[in-house]
Image (cartoon, rainbow over all chains, first blue to last red; front, side, top):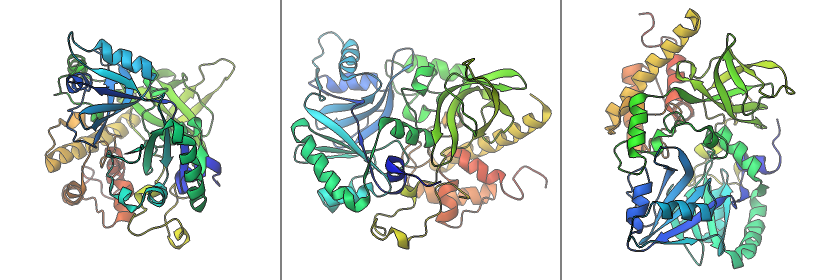
Length: 355
Length: 100
C-alpha cells in the first residue's frame, strides 16, 4: 500500500506536526526540585539538559499526565499531554506544601511547540541548526537563540520537539518548510500522529489514559519506580502487591472495531478495546485492549471483538499482536552513513515484514 | 479456557519468564522480573539498556536460550521488546523446553 502525505513522511522522510496539545510549564524557585520530585514517580536523576519520560500520577496512582520532566539549570520544564497548562499548574500547586516557594510559568502564551518526526528528521535538524545537533542524545535537550530542542518522540522514529518563541514561530516554520523541500517534508495532523503512536504501541493519554487502569496494567512500569517515594508510592506498591487484573494488549483485525468494543473468547467477555484506528501502513485495523491477564498474550487468533454500539453490529475475529507493528526505518538509518538524498541506494527492508 | 489455548499461553509464559530473568541477571538492573513490561522497549527508552547491555544480552540469549542473532538484520527486529525476543525464541526449530 502506497503511503501518502503526512503518514508517508513520518515513516519515510520527515513530518512536521503542531504540538498545541502539549502543555509546557516551567517550575522554578527554591522548592521547585522538592515539588517536582514529590510528584514524579521515577527517580529524579537528571543533569541540566536531560529529561525523563514518565507519567504523573495522582495519590491513587491514576495517570494524570504523560510527561517529560526536564532539568533546565535550576528549574524544571514539564511537557505534558493530558491536562491543559493551567490545569497542570493547579495540579502541581495542589501538591506544594505550606511555605514552599515555587513559581509556575505556563510557557504556552509565549511559546509554540512543533515536532519533527521521521527517519531523516535528524538530517533536517542538522540542515537547520548545524551538525552539532546530531550529538543530542535521546531524552536530552539543547537551547539556542530562543528555541529549545527536545530529543523525544512517540512514533518509533527519530523525533525532535521544538519549543520556540511565539513571535518567531511563523518565521521558523517557513524556514523549516523551505529546508524541508529537500526532504519531502509534509505536515502531520494530530489524528495521524496518534495513529503513528498506536502503531508504535505508545501510550496515548487521550485513549489508553481514559481506561482508569494502573501503570502495571498499562505496561508503563518502565516509567515509574516502586522504590521511589512520591505522592503515588503507596498506591503503586499496593497495586504491585495485588497484581494486575488486566494487561494492555496490542490487537488487530481486518474488520473495523472501536473503542469500547468487547473482546470475547468462546462467548465470554475477557476484555475491552481502549484504542483503535486504521493503519495505512499495515492496511488493517489496529488497537489496544485491556484483557484479563490470563488471556493477555500476543499472537492469539481465537478471540473475537463485539461492537459496543448496536448500530455498528457484528462480531469479528480479533488477533492479538506483538508490538510494534512497524520495522521503523529510524532503527536502520545510521546518522553517520545515510542521507535522504541517497536513500535510493539503500536497501532497507519493508516497513512491514513480507510487504 | 480450553487445553489448546492454555498450552499455547503456558508455553509463551514460560519463555517470557526465562527472558525476563535473563535480562535482570545480565544487566544487573534492580528489578523484579515481573516489573519488566513485556511490550516495553528494551533499549534506549523503556528498560533503557545500552550498547554494552546489548552485547551481553545477545550472547546470553544464544548461550542460554539458543537464539542466534548473527547480524543487525536479525537482531534489530528481534530485540525491540521482551515479547519480540519471546517470539524469536518460540520460532526456533528446537524451542528450549520443548522436546529433547
